[in-house]
Length: 229
Image 1 (tube, rainbow, N blue to C red):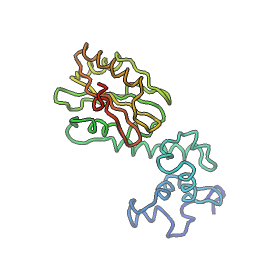
Image 2 (tube, rainbow, N blue to C red):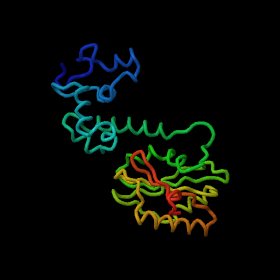
Image 3 (tube, helix red, strand yellow):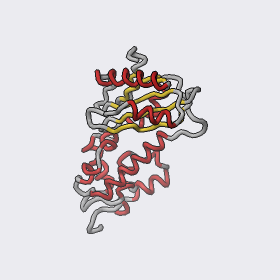
Image 4 (spheres, rainbow, N blue to C red):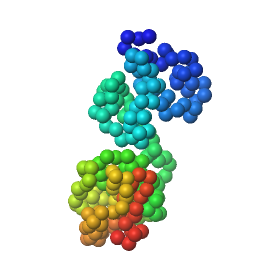
């Protein structure tokens, strides 16, 4: 046994997640086993698998672990900064893959199309982020752009920031989306007021605001669909 901690090779053969992945494929591994492969080394008296199980328990599963920040993770006994950054890097790669589209540019036909485009990027964020989806005359996506990052309770944005980007990319129309870190996508009075300001600015600039979509935890609300646009 290492003086620094239990490594995966110290486990019995049938409990080694790397060997199990090679034999059965990644889909056969539990969440804890996959995280253990990232950790590689546990602590003295605790294997990487057991540490991974403890992390999942302390943060309430994968969703909680995804939301955890690096200082929170690195403060866990036996984890440290290096392992914390490895975990966050793995989650970020998964998020980027989920947001990646191949082939032709996607076409937005309804609110759900737009929500799907940004859901994985927004649903686990602990700060409000405002994202603009710029569209051409056929409602094909030109660009998805993060306009602003706010606090736990707000994402300040000015219409000029959004429409400057829209004009720069030759957009005919746009959809704005932002998240509610609480997970509840119910629009606030500020959300409704921002929508009115953006619609007015868009009418003046000749760039149509098609919708304002609020993203919660796996849910969304379209202000157009509820009659607030």
